[in-house]
Image 1 (cartoon, rainbow, N blue to C red):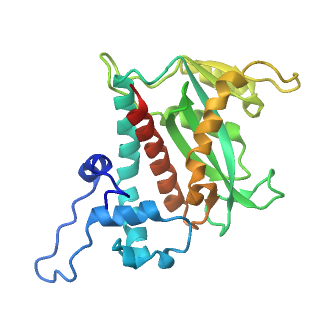
Image 2: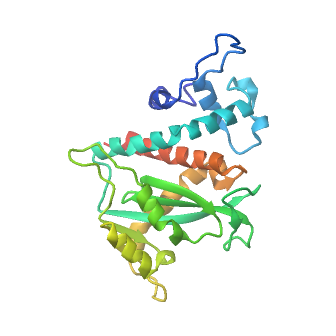
Image 3: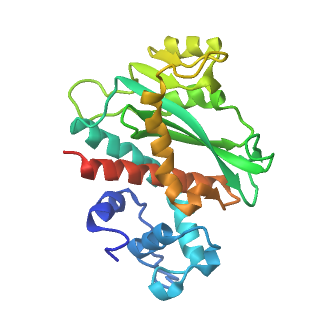
Amino acid sequence: MPWIVSDELWARIEPLLPVVPRRADHPGRRRLDDRKVLSGILLYTGIPWEFLPQELGFGSGMTCWRRLRDWNDAGVWQRLHESLPAELNAAGALDWSRAVIDGSDVRAMKGGPKTGRSPVDRARTGSKHHLITEAHGIPLAVSLTGGNRNDVTQLMPLIEAVPPVRGRRGRPRRRPVSLYADRGYDHDKYRRQVRAVGITPVIARRGTGHGSGLGIHRWVVEQSFALPHWFRRLRIRWEIRDDIHEAFLVLGCALICRRRLKSSP
């Protein structure tokens, strides 16, 4: 269905999918076409998987769920996300002069791993998305933790998770010149760690008045959070299994990169 999975998107994803050979002795029912199942995955809106309409021809909800799980285990979504910044870098669309990091709380309706009592949601069970972007808000790396985890605990893991970005002559790029963050990251210990990897930390300090001017640079990460949170499955965590929610999270970041690539000159 081109209205769900375009030819361009399918051309990117198909080479990343693992090949599943059909058994010769007991072949059983023919495996549903991967492109149709991908359409079902992208169509999924947070309803129970068993309610996914089979009339569309995308297979049952559990078929889509299992294929999403298997492709996530095979690293398909991560490789898709890592391939797009290289194209953006080649097009000159990445700005390495600074990166921005932040966290965003989401409610976890069914609990599960990587959830906790959220201090910003009346102690309801929640999770937290952590994101690092380049200067324009293009996602470089993302992670998932419980809602009770402090943002600063993901500072160094996110920096280390930025993959080597090719696309230009010379060595692949992994580190921005500077890193902007809000008061939640105000710890001298972590400032030293950031400097140790060759990045200048620009972090707002607690106890100082607002109006430091950092907001004119940090707003891009809020925009990057808003884009995947338009998808109901990411605005609210419906999945009990954390790996399934993480699969959607990484896929959402990949789709944001793809949109930026299509709109870049």
